[in-house]
Length: 258
Length: 354
Image (cartoon, rainbow over the protein chains, first blue to last red):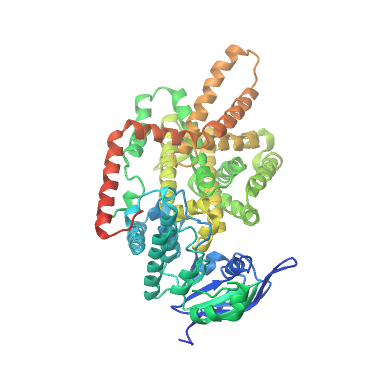
């Protein structure tokens, strides 16, 4: 498993003027792993995500994804390489139906351009049909296929999270970054999401996620990376992290975890 | 479960076919009414331009204030190549379209690097520059005196000269343009465009190259305008720079706003309303204000633009489709029952619901 490094982050830093949001963070993610990034508010988790996914450019350091340096690549280029993400504040396309949302997720898998679309070449119709079937299968995987033809904006919050996940997973990417996937979900919904994530992992997907809900983190993460003030202060299995003195001090306060 | 692409996009083509048939039968009924035919021909030109602009504004979310320049590029390219080089009008039309696309590309590249409505400003300036070119580059355009003697188009050995013939030529182009746009909208490209509207950051992270699609739509809209301009040149056989002034660009914009930019029919509706209102004004206004000049049109449409944006931001096409749905309860019921069966189906599969 050690050779199978999917994402390698080395000495990554990002400053906004004088504010060092992340400083010299290094870690790696293996294929088929679920890695959690935790840390108190303002620890730099979201910045780390935005840098890895190409929304922000790092001040220094390297990011290697599938053996390719991806610093300076734009998000859409990363998606073409097989890395996508979900968002903390939902970014469902409210102007579309649920299934169309997921079909946008298939964008990198489809080929139709303006001319083949405009002249409606035979292969376009075929591709559309395949896309629809694939998107429907993705919805079935997260258990919301009955909502396929509803407008996305009328769905309850928890369902929209599942739409986002199905959409991100549609193109069968190697790595999905989840930014606080459990935020705003009730217990049943988070259970459902955990179930879906574990199933997707068993199908070969890799996840890197930021989360506040410690119960979820402890139950599904293979490894946990702890950030505090932009620095990595610990890394290890959930058990190790739960007992790590620095983590307890910095993040969990004086109390024992779990 | 019968998955069908038609479920996403309202599969009914009846309405579209009806419009097409009405448009194609109309001149047979009114073949002697030249006023009606020439008005309809103008609507045809504007429909082509505003359908292209609808793709840009409604689906790519960008505003162009320079469509008249592309319209003019098409017209002058056709005029110049057919008159001075004896080139076939069809080849000249293609040359104009290619030129327009290239110009759009050159303007678009820097404009789309910046966000928001930079394109509107860039095209505004571009429109003024092109107008100046038309006016001053006298060897090619004839300057303010205009360009005379543009030959008519020939098709299958027939010279298209009468309004009756030209009507069909224009409307075949217009309907093909609408069909082309509709096909784009209902595809991967259309979904990518809609996703940009929905959330740029999410679209980007799913692999949608936003800049590329905006640029492509801008180029397509330029080609639409250019083709309309080429046809126009052959129709009127005389063009001058005033036809392609900035105000024309604004009228194109108004057509799209009237028609509504969320529907591919918006361009047709907007062009029709614009031309009809314009004709109506010419009849009515002199009755009340005997000395009124052409300026009243600008005032009227300016006010209309503001009113539309306040009270009907989605345009007429949106309101019309609402009314059609209300008038056709049958259609609605069919759709609802489809959804219900979908839900029951899901329940048995074990889909979780709140």
